Image (cartoon, rainbow, N blue to C red):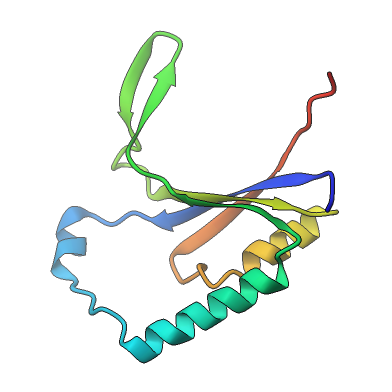
Length: 121
């Protein structure tokens, strides 16, 4: 395992409330679910030495400033951070590859990969 760690922030495009409520998305069939799980498990197995923390979905939050705390994220933001993952890799290129090959990437989503700087002392 590498000594470099990377924070992968999963982002998706926010949609206006009216637009998202008008679009009804049907649930995947059992065969589609099986295929999605197979892709996910194959990806997880391929990068098992790199995935430190699978992270999870992010819920509602607060924005903290020196003089105030407010609700967030805000609806005017067109990209919402929806989840995170921590990856261990020898290079940014490998960390990006782990994120890029994730079956959780789909049109309208992205992953921001940032090296976590280690403190000395």
